[in-house]
Length: 277
Ligand code: ATR
Image (tube, rainbow, N blue to C red; front, side, top):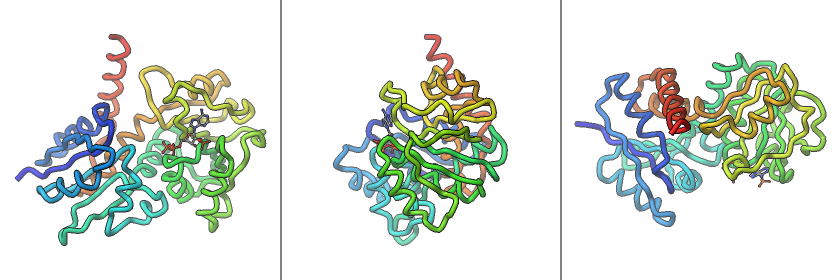
């Protein structure tokens, strides 16, 4: 019987997850379906319970439901606990729900593929929302020299620092105290999505700095345009992270690891086609 999977969100029409997972399923010859489900904002838990009651094996969760999904889980991975949010759900045999968070692993895999090992790097994480929180532990686990977090609202960065007190190389710093270049700057803010540019000091980027924007778009993102104007070594957007978190969910569910490369290329081509239309 075909195993059923789905992604829940609101809105959901824009989601690339059905395409990504159907490509992975073809590649690895898995007998599975994967649909997009628009859950009403106040009825996420009802929709999810119904999906699992009707035989759903697993699900992804996207905005705005990742925190609600976290609260519904009977069992959580360490990564999900530290992220405070869940993007991957499992229907456990005893009717319970298991939750994990693969966003951070997807990010870190993409960063290392694009820019080389994280070990020993000085990394700046810009933003202190849900997207940032899910990535802190995976970055720290890769033995970076230091991870600095900054945010428009500094107190939120300080709160995140306090969750990871045992890591002596993780600091919150006010934006105006950032005065020298980093090896890697990661933008996790949603500023670009609303057409705004975050105000950051130019001094944090030089010709040795790699820059990564967790969002992606048809054109170069505003953050990456800013980084390129400062002659950053390399810039990349978050398409590889999107495919990477999906690949990590897929291998948790199916026990096989799909090849991300062809799927990233396919999505990139689709974006280019849309831009040309
Ligand atoms: P997500 O779950 O996607 O991280 P979020 O929790 O709403 O979303 O967090 C959004 C992040 O983008 C926050 O770090 C936010 O900064 P504040 O904490 O100061 O609100 C940041 N952000 C959004 N718009 C911004 C802008 N125009 N300039 C700077 N930071 C911005």
